[in-house]
Length: 255
Ligand code: NAP
Image 1 (cartoon, protein in one colour):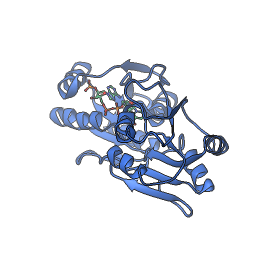
Image 2 (cartoon, helix red, strand yellow; image 1 turned 60 degrees about the horizontal axis):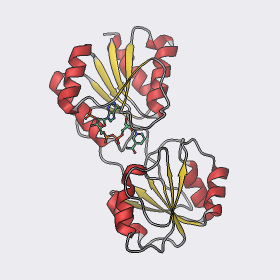
Image 3 (cartoon, helix red, strand yellow; image 1 turned 30 degrees about the horizontal axis):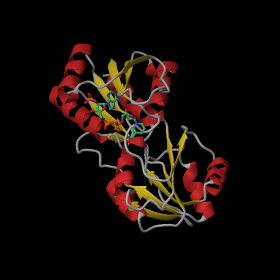
Image 4 (cartoon, rainbow, N blue to C red; image 1 turned 135 degrees about the vertical axis):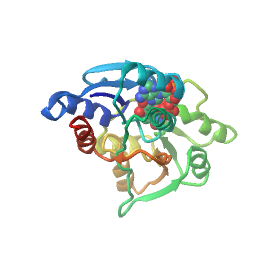
């Protein structure tokens, strides 16, 4: 059985490692696909292809040419375009698709979260929430939204953490940190204290790699603006763990 893993996440790498390293993966050939967005990506084990397919038509052509029998969409919960393309392309060809999505984060006792539907709403909320430095962890491509919203209000300070440097407009009064998780609670707490962070802005990415900032914010009593995930399109089954995705693949390989 030939499988395409749409990746770019820790779960996609864990799935590749699981299929490569255990008996359950025997008989399952897989290729991991990355978009090529970051300059020095963490690579999964096994065969990797890098770069877009060229929209739905390009993905249909790839799946047909490679004889792909099943697709796992293990992309980031906010990578909605590629997920939509995967649903459309596999639907057109009748190829089974499983969406692997880590669960989102949930607020606990002591958390001061405000959920917002998108980045624009996060920028609006930020105009009224929290004093002090705003710590933006929503990724470099969304920075232009904060740049536009706060251009005329250069009083607020921003601490921005991204994997690669921003390419477009950035908010005023910016300190830029280039880093990638996983992070520790102690490290996040020290960072927030050092930069006098008064509010944290995050996507609801879920997973353990970047969750320490939420614990640190709770411990420091800081408000957090949490951007909700885009919905998964209707149709494909959704698994919330790598083990479940492996079981889904093995059940198909055994047929
Ligand atoms: P996106 O907006 O959903 O997709 C934009 C385009 O990038 C797609 O139309 C596709 O190009 C290409 N693409 C995306 N993922 C791909 C993959 N795994 N393999 C091949 N092509 C892919 O995606 P994004 O938000 O830019 O994210 C890009 C990648 O970074 C994803 O693989 C995602 O898992 C990872 N990532 C995203 C975030 C985030 O916050 N969005 C965070 C961490 C990691 P074509 O139309 O040409 O096929």
